[in-house]
Image 1 (tube, one colour):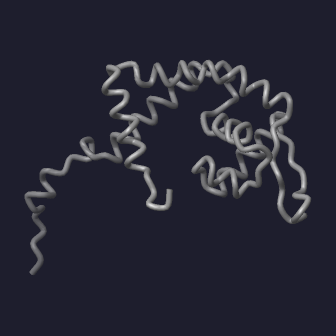
Image 2 (image 1 turned 180 degrees about the vertical axis):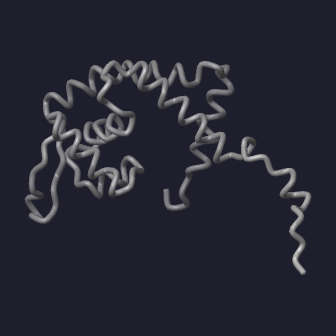
Image 3 (image 1 turned 60 degrees about the horizontal axis):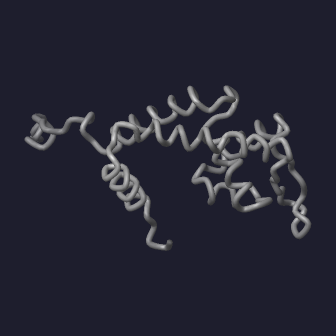
Length: 152
């Protein structure tokens, strides 16, 4: 007959002390800081990252944006649609493969990125504001280590 009582490990498991929960709470805090300070109430953090990826990598397919931003394919489609609706990006057929769509920053999109970058730097500063300089270096190092892929 199986034992229905939690093992000592189950009893000591507190979700609020688990890495996933803490990362989610930290990310929620960062997103709230972003929305309060970005200066454009319609611009989300993931939309901004997508615009930055286009600025950094140039015209890109949605597949390339998925790789650059770590946003899943279904989500990137919605982001692209919303950015296009605001005339922040344009969509054109790929000259080599007409089945593909290439996303490019418009002049309006580039201007928004340039205006938002200083705010984004301030947002990062606010997100890390509770940490001293050594802790900031450590947390960024550790986060990069957590997401490190053996292929990189």
